[in-house]
Image (tube, rainbow, N blue to C red; front, side, top):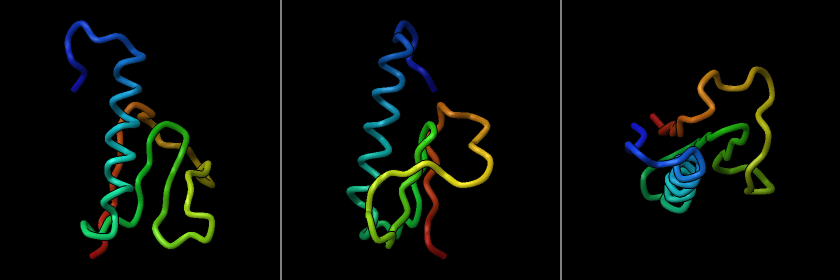
Length: 70
């Protein structure tokens, strides 16, 4: 939830901080995918970086989505 009084830039920065935190801890937490804005990171991809997702972009670009292995 956005912090009252924080600007849009602060919200976006915080979103990227959370997304990068999840990527850095992906192996230990069994995270398979992290998406934020118009970018997605997937565990095990050859390039290992952020890319644009194929298909339809997420409806809420302001949310960090974290997918875990089953």
